[in-house]
Figure (cartoon, rainbow, N blue to C red):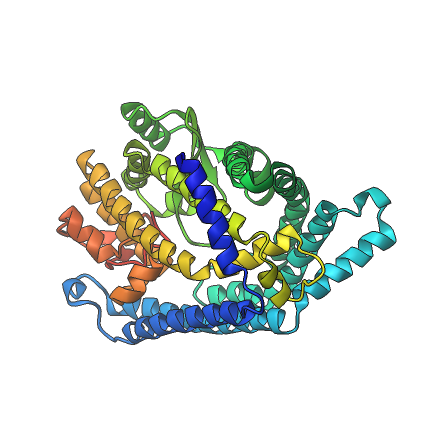
Length: 464
């Protein structure tokens, strides 16, 4: 008996074991959701206590001005309060969706719409699922509007980060929904058609479809999606472009284009990144980063980013994502025909595939929490390695100064509770990164405009 047959036999036994009449799937999923909410709330409480401190960490007390520290702490507390309220709001929505059987009611309503207004050939499960998901997207967009408005026009505005106008905000929402209405139907149709036509072994084909879709999205993103929301302009001739091109050539990085993105039209936050296919990469630098940093500091940021490429981090993460997708699709094959799961959520007469996948995703919640923790651990390790890579290229001081400036500009958290950081942060805090770089300040760091910046730590989420 080969390994594939063993896997199939195991899946069949597991599927029979989990498909038990009257099994309380709804209570289990709601319990998982509440448990995760309480766990994350506990971690948030631990972090909030850190954000109430009035003095910076001892290791940084001679480098951090009290004014910047106080503002950073206030911003952190404001985000923590907003996060708590937003999570409570989301939790109420989830429980209400389940307790009031919103899913079967929405499925029935969208089916009636199709029967009433669509030609007969669009009455099948695939067409029904597309209308259902698009309706679901619209509902979620409406429900998320209050928190989005508050985050953008109250919280971010208060601390000087918001650059969006109400018109741009509304335009972004419209564009996002148009994009969803354009991309979701063909992708979802392909997803469902593969499952319908390939039988019990659908997860192999679904996994290949997912991998191909990732490559396709990477290809069309800079051409068709990114320009809808931001303007990419070629980096002007000058020392920065010359130095970045020299760095790319030194590392044999397949640089195709150097862009500046107008991130300042929405936010004052700064960043830089690269994207593209293995043989054709594009580097994108935020205009805010160029405006507030010296040339060599921007190059140091990109040396860190290209370190991820040179060390194979992007390839490794892509490989891990493929393993993760395969694991999800293979496990979904265990749940796709689970009568007790469908029945407990009000689907007694029909078992739509897309409904099964949504419910399965909720069942997978606790495992996703563990995967998130493990991925953050790996990500922080990669960040240290990329920093060391930039250090090896001779950008020690420039990278350290850039990290400090980004800390100031983004008002990132000065300190973090270890448990909260382990679960939530994909980047090390700045004090850890500076220590790893063995950076010793010899003078107060200044911004490009001459404003003094003498802080040193971050959440790691807003930076490199």
